[in-house]
Figure (cartoon, rainbow, N blue to C red):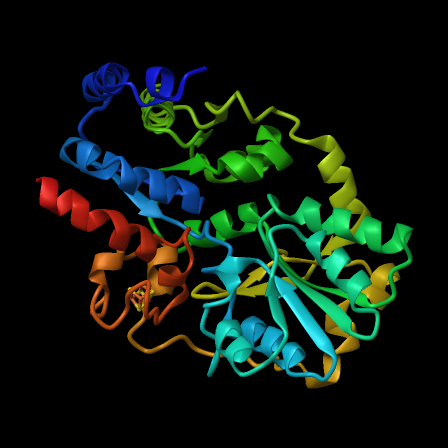
Length: 369
Ligand code: SF4
C-alpha cells in the first residue's frame, strides 16, 4: 500500500469525481461526517470545494470529543486539580479548552500539578512515582479511546494501585447521530473510521433501520472519502439505506471484540450526558460501573464538583455547527476574536474541531481559487 499511489493519486481522484458527477442526480445532497479527522481531511484536500458545484455539501457533526465536552465537566477537572496533593492527568487537547472561567493550562500556570499524557497508562507511572499524591486521570473521547481507559482500570486493579482514580467523560457516537437527526436535514452519514474500528459496522444497523439514511464508514484519504460519497450516491439511486464499510483496511463488521469486552467489563451507560451545544442526550455517555466506584473520581470528589450546566460564550455558535445548522464561517468572531491562539469556543481549540480545520485550511483554499 502506497499513500500517494493508492490514496492521494490525482488520477484516481479525477476518476472518482467523474463517477460522482455521472451518477449523482444533481439534487442537493447533505452528508454529515461525525469524526473530526474526516472534517480535517475534507478541508485539507479541498473536497468540499470539489463537490459543492455538484450540489453535495458536507455538514460537520459532533465528532470531536474535546468540542462536545461541556464547560461544567472542564470545571470539574479544574476543581479536582485545585485540591491539595492532587496530580491531574489528561490528553493534550484538553489543556486549552475553556471552562466557565479558566482552563487547565491557565491552572497549570498558577501552579496546579496538571500533566499531559499520551496514553492513560502514563498515569500509572506518575502514580507510582508519587505515592504521597492522588493522581486523577481525566478521561475523554468516543469509543476510540474508551478501551484505553478500560485497560488503565485493568492495570490499576492488577497492580493494586491505591492512589489513581479515573474521571470518566467517555461518550458514544450513535446517540449523538440520533440527536442531530432531530435537528437538521441530513441525508447520509460518513461513518467515523476510528470509532468503527472498535464498535464495528454492525453497530449502526438499528440506526440505519430507524432513520433510513445510508452510513458509509470511511477512511481518511481523499480517495477514501470520495469513494464513500460515491457509495452513498449509489445507495440513494437504488433507494437503499444500509451500512457499508469503505474503510475495510481498518474496520470489520464485528469490530474489535476484545476492546468491546473490556469496555463492557468496566463501563455502563449513563441515563443521560450533557454535550456542549447539544444539551442532554439520553444514554450517550459512559460511567464506571458501581462495583468500581472506589476508583471513580466523580464519586470521591462528589461534594466539590460543580454540576450546574453552563452556557457557552454568547457569540459562539459551536453548538449550531455540531448540529449541522451552521458553518464556522457563519460565526461573527471566526478568525478575528476567535483563533487557535486565542480560542473562544471548543471547536477552535481542538486539533479535531471544525473551526480549527476551517482556520487552518480555508485561507489556503481561498488563496488558491
Ligand atoms: S469560531 Fe470560535 S466562537 Fe465561533 S463558533 Fe467557532 S469556536 Fe465558537
